[in-house]
Each structure stands twice: as C-alpha cells, then as structure tokens.
Image 1 (cartoon, rainbow, N blue to C red):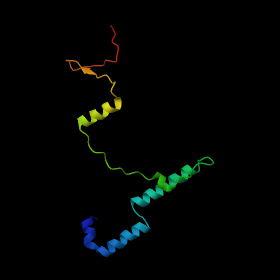
Image 2: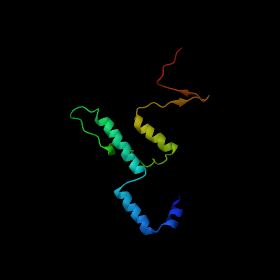
Image 3: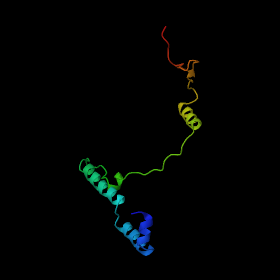
Image 4: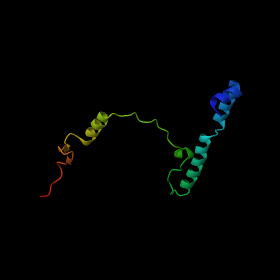
Length: 108
C-alpha cells in the first residue's frame, strides 16, 4: 500500500495513534533489528571471559550513515597528495603513455 492509499483509507487521528503505538511497541525493521541484536548479544555474551563487558542488543544495530558527498578529481588528487606528504616523488608519464616510477631502479 502506498502512502497516498493509506491516507485515503485512514484519517490523521488513526495515523497518529499508530505512530504512538510504534514508539511504544516497535514493529517492522526496528523490531527486526532489535530481535537480531538480542540473538547476537546472547551468542557473544556466552563466549565472554570473566570481567568482560556484557553486550546489549543495540550494540549490534546497523549504523546508518549519510552518503559522503561526491568529490571532483581535483579534490581527490589534493586529498591524496596531502596524505602522502610533501616529500613524495611524482611519477612522470613518458611520451608513449607509459609511467616511469622514479623510485624504481631499472635493470640494464
């Protein structure tokens, strides 16, 4: 059922009641995560050594992170060079399109 169909069938009062009920007794994916977390916590907790912290179901909930913003090629290059440091030797491209690594010793 789509949201539009749902809103055609029930009024805002009933929808508000369902939202309140969901906060008290979660159902759907929240409930499934909680059940899976309970099982994972039990499996881990029976294997812990004395003195280790007992795990809780929410220790196993997936973390939903927003996607990282897209980077341009120039931003990626700048970030990479900042991680490599100022002393990195640049790889030069030969005229034939192949790379030449200044750090590699050549055989003769």
